[in-house]
Image (cartoon, rainbow, N blue to C red; front, side, top):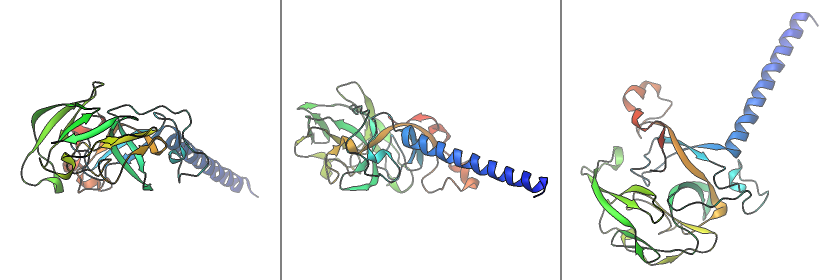
Length: 248
């Protein structure tokens, strides 16, 4: 074998090793630290919009089998567990179909009594502070031609965020009282009248199903555009949402 052939073979093997190392590093980062996530629906407007891309902190709540790629059944429960806090925006696996990722806000902790009355959230019999702060104009397919009232809610622990009220008489505006079981959480979307959450089929979410806490929006583009359509970036990128908190 000539020196030239040996050099080419060695160079190819070095490139393969670098690629393998890069892939392993990416898997480790995605599994243990941060996972990218895109917003598929308008259930968290106006906090999160369709076309937002954000990082989810995997270590915020510890690790379960759902933290791993393909969710291998290696162990049950969580390790190095830390509990979600009231007001966290979190990604979790849908209890009825663990193949699906959902993103909602934690409003009820284990043992809480949760109810919605006339659009007002009640926690353990006390109304959550709710103030009308203006109107919001949804974009794209969520724009019905009229502005939507936007409210600022403040939870008992001081976490504050905005919610939308599309319809003052929606099915989710008056609910029964839910008692959150031990080891479970009650999740709601900020777009209260357009969110499938714990008031409906989602139900209570076990701690094991949590993937992580939403942290920061790193990219955002109008909902009818793909990030790969670079030619649309000058008009469709939402620069004002880059590096914005995904929590409020």
